[in-house]
Amino acid sequence: MTTSNGSRPIRVVIADDEADVRLLLRIQLEHEGFEIAGEANDGKSAIEQCAETQPDALVLDLLMPGVNGFEAIPTLRRQHPEIAVVAYTAVAGEFVRKEMARLRIPLLLKSGNVSALAEKLRELVRSA
Amino acid sequence: MTTGGEDDAAARRATTAVDVERALADVDAIRRRVVNVVGHALRTPVTTMAGMAAALATTTDEATRATLVDGLVRNAGRVERLLDDLLVAVGVTTALPIDDAEATPVHATLAVAWDSVGGTGPLAVDGPEMLAHVQPSAFARLAELLLDNALKYGHGVVRITTERTQLGVRIEFESAGDGPTDEEVEKAFELLYRGEHAVMTAPGLGVGLAVARELAQANGGAVSFDRRGSWVVTTVDLPAA
Image (cartoon, rainbow over all chains, first blue to last red; front, side):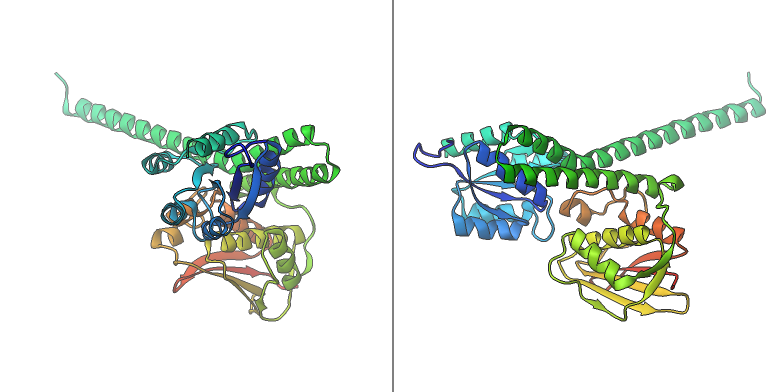
């Protein structure tokens, strides 16, 4: 079991507008021992889910309709500085890379293999 | 010593060489843009399929396995549609639908398309139900593309209006948004063009409107794109049955 402090699993909110990406991440992360605290399909509902479920970490897609990931980050940082955020995107051009580096948010490219994401989540929660 | 004529010829050759070099650089930039956009559009469904296939191999729970198989089929279909769209967008006629044109209900087709692009709740259509004389599969794809655009790039409010015109059937797809810029209106049908708002909102190919237009034209219709205040309006004209 992947635990945040040795006693309970790391709780994660998944924010992605693609239902199949959320479905797959839920299956993969649960298989890795994480607990999925909630799902969101845009930045606004990601903020709401974080307020409601108080997860340890948020997997955040950047390109989403409505409030996108970039726009959600300042609010998340202000309201929930304790929640570790990992940007998880299919598109990572120069702007995205620079912006995430500036905000000190780890950036991972979407992949069929969840190992890198799982490891990054564990590392961030451990070091929090 | 060279003559004036030789100087002119040399200057023309130099100019031609510079032009050729610029043209080659433009072609190279376009080639990179195509690979970049297509690669990114394929990335999500392909990585999703890879992940689902791997999860399927390690999952024994029957309900989860069934969910994963459904997901694999769905994403394979998505890749298939991406490839068809690309071919249609660049005018490959062999990729156009081959079913026969027939009397096709407009409202019913829009409702099915709305459901397939993940629209929530019933789609509100203002105007009478009408029959268009079109290939059902082409009309279905056209409706999916335009509703998907309206959902992805608007503010979640989509209005559909249908009306009979002198030439046939007119359908207007309106979505609330920030209003497209002049450049976005001008380049809406340009292959692989994606405005700043689109780039920041969702991954995509930037071929949806071009494909919709090809499908409409193949059925004797037309597609236009404009703004109405802060709303984005895509108008489709099709022959009536």
